[in-house]
Length: 223
Image (cartoon, rainbow, N blue to C red; front, side):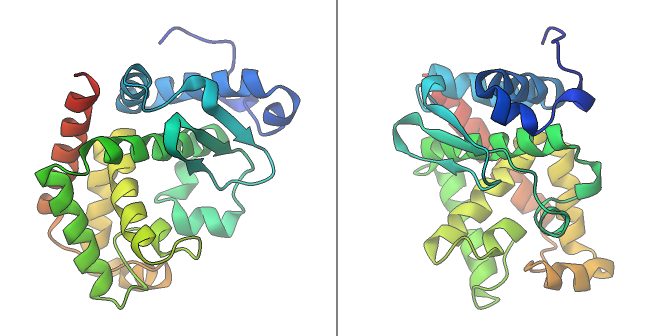
């Protein structure tokens, strides 16, 4: 992606309040700089009308974001407080504010990927694995801290777990690989428990299903 006018250190929250349209452009530019696959996914979803740029809006009062029907995405631009960021973002200290908000947009785009592949074999198998992992812990812990947060209940927890795993992959496949190692490492059991996570050692199975689900979604988006 061509060099833009916003250096990462100058891309901050106040821009979303002062100039929402410029902020949206800056987020998308940063996504392109940071995540080649994330930018590819966004472009394919726009081409497939799963994401509609005119329906991409900002909410500067909160960090919580939403992906709704008809191509709507509402991106929360408020920075996470440190405790929430540490709990919900794996390797949180490596995320600058631009990274944080670009990743948030990447997650909302992943909802579009799930929509495109939800009836396909790999995605259905991934959802069942996610469901089994969470049900094994009484619904309180699962494969992602986001799914375990108080924002989601019932079936929505399975959806967020699935979508977040897909978002980790599209952000960077290596990021997902490192996260899956973390899920299986006995050294981090206390951290996992505190963050609402189960222990899962079959990283190859999860990685393969996530990769297949994303690839199927992209094939569908290009049809």
